[in-house]
Length: 123
Image 1 (cartoon, rainbow, N blue to C red):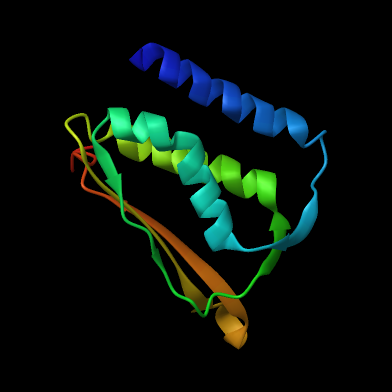
Image 2 (image 1 turned 135 degrees about the vertical axis):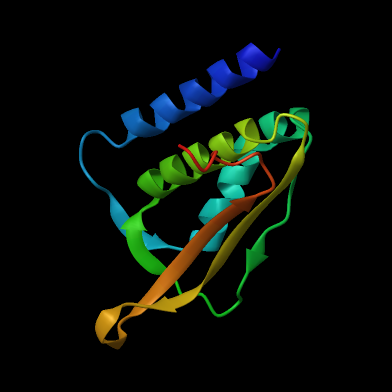
């Protein structure tokens, strides 16, 4: 079953890449909504791994202009990697908050934290 879940995650990833039709599709995007939709896509995989998702979203996050499929692809990869780093379960915490670029330009900060094993210091 776990192999099938991983196969389905790869399939969804490939479908997202295919749906872009080779060019960017920039539109107004609520990053918090895209994180939630990606959690929905990976919910079964996360639940099977014993991973609890605890989103932390700042309500002051503005909409941005971005390619929603590319964002979902990044979130899908991050969430899948986080789940794989927690073989006995744990907590996945996606955070979205306002930020600032150099020169005072507004930005959005997206962080993905997990309680996984991490990377050994020697690596």
